[in-house]
Length: 366
Image (cartoon, rainbow, N blue to C red):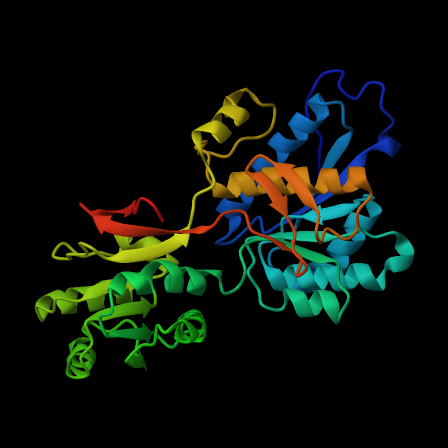
């Protein structure tokens, strides 16, 4: 699937040659569980193109549906080459982006896009793929261990010297997060007295908590899905344990997982700071007045801003004639983005939140 998305601004391109247009490929999974995110990214990208055209730039957007499917890479890569895309932005699935980058490298004779910039993909392989495989891949995202670093910096010190345990659910996410917290925390003197995993989706974890109590634990960090965090927190209250409880960014789903008798009061969580601010909303203006096709919901959220920022970065990279974005800074709707030597630019830091009155509230001063 390929679609050319051209801004509907009367007369804006009247004196501009189509051959002179700067063509940006937008690769997104338009079906499946990530489709709502992709649709809002597409809309944000269209808004950015509209802005650039108003500034006198001849920018066109070519949309392809990657479906997060590596098997689509050969056909989509050829489609983007045929459309004369000079840079590709947007992939939400790192494996799909990697497969496409390999296709572009193999088709160097055909003038493929200069680079691919993924969105919110913290994959640890980015550096190796760039340095060893020489793929022109970049990422608008935090580092792979950024969540763990936030736990070490923002949560573990708040345990105030209490003996703590790190628990994980044995999943890829949970185990990796727990391992990273240990690797980062122990050199700083923040060592857990117990490291343990548990079987997820159980109705109770009281046996686990009793073992932790015997070990002197007085605080727990839980690297797991929201449902298991709720179960453990409820069991802690049932046992009348005066423990501090904390979790990672998957705690954002806690409001959808709590039970009527849950008491999450005081629970800590880290997550990326939201990108939308009043200043950004003012910059975007009235979304309904734009000629792009709006999604059903029009509130400004991170995915829309990713799409907008990626197009700004892509267009500026083309204006400067860049194929390597490392060390380069780009002004975007969400602020200046600088790509490091690994090829990553972090859009927002992690922040600390605490559960109060039925919701997570930002802890001031973090």
